[in-house]
Length: 280
Image 1 (cartoon, rainbow, N blue to C red):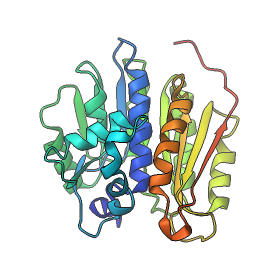
Image 2 (cartoon, one colour; image 1 turned 120 degrees about the vertical axis):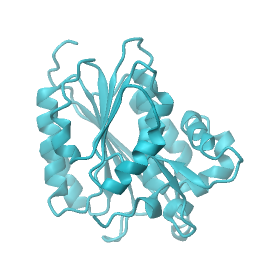
Image 3 (cartoon, rainbow, N blue to C red; image 1 turned 120 degrees about the horizontal axis):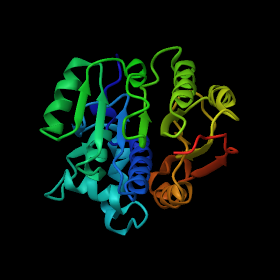
Image 4 (cartoon, helix red, strand yellow; image 1 turned 30 degrees about the vertical axis):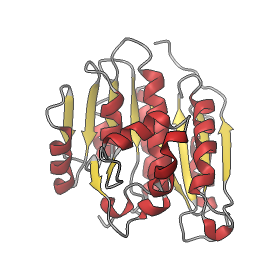
């Protein structure tokens, strides 16, 4: 795989994704009952930021304002904990973000098929109880994990979007997973580049599951090659998640906006009618 986690770590896409993950887990952990967290593309969990990395357009733009970000405060505390001396040198990936929010009774299943990244993931997670690290394809591994014994939980689907059939496989996996475990919360990140591709992806899902779609764009939707923003598809979003996420993205949007385009940014939100969900 060509995706360079260290180069991309902490970019604007990571900021949106990990902010959404934080707010989702905050909502889910308000109930006392344990839950399962399943990450299909976990990565290494902790990254040393590359000098020329994309974090400069992401967490690098938020870092100096971190104490004033009200709606993103919990996520920023997780990032700050990875940089205890106050200098921005490391970035926590999704497993580290989740581990900071989950209780000791909550179970983590982390899938990472690249052996070197999986080893780094093991090192980063240490001896955390109730944690499984699977060195295998996350799409396939997911179906052996659902429905979980806990009955409650969240699945994060965050593929690198390198394979030619990635969008189709992501949609098929999500629909199949929802059929098996319709009570689960699913958080899906996708890149905003070509609108036609995204439209086809969402059309395949619309009406087949209850979801909210939110997109934060850092620059105008003009070019077709460059990443212009992030999309978040939330299936069965916990109560108030959409409102809280919209408030948080509105807070960081101006800071992440591309200054080369005059600091223009936009937030889009669309909710789909609820499907029939069996009682939990």
